[in-house]
Image (cartoon, rainbow over all chains, first blue to last red; front, side, top):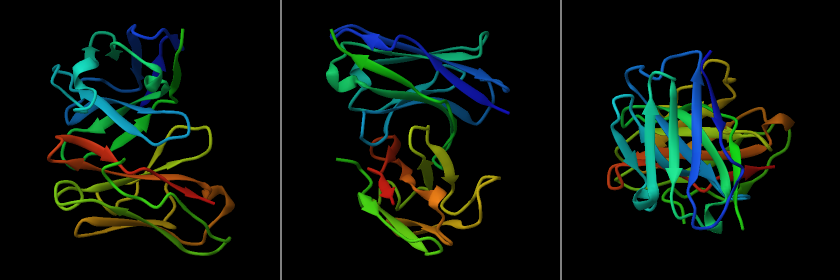
Length: 121
Length: 108
């Protein structure tokens, strides 16, 4: 059974870089037809797509975050990572990683449990 | 402001049938498939419906999805107390070249 697990600091200072890793188990990150994505949810608010990566390194991002986001993949460790630069309090959210179907018939399944990242000095 | 529009809340009584709407445009729902997610309190979202009306294994057939034009709907029949959750729709957006979500609907 495929499982995803987010990890990383729960507290980041303003203007610094938020870094998270998603470890994939029970399946290979090199599976064809799937991207690996990041989605966030500010406290009490809805879901926001951040970006996704294919095992080959191909990426695409939410235009509103693109200038601050980097997503990378490590196929040898079955992991992919998120870097969000120059964070502010508005970036405080639960961050989820999920597998994403790599077509316009796009959906996310399964999801990690999520990790809360607070931006505060 | 979310790209896909959902009612903020809805309610029902046990055994009742409720529907949740999701309105979009020609660049998203109008030309691509819709998925639905259930988020129980304090947990991660879970895929409920994909490709407009397909249920993953393990999802009860009380849950059904449909799409018409630039709108989609999630129907829940035989409502149960454990269905109390937030529900989100999503679809690929050709203009943004990525997936977009609705703002979510809280079912009480």
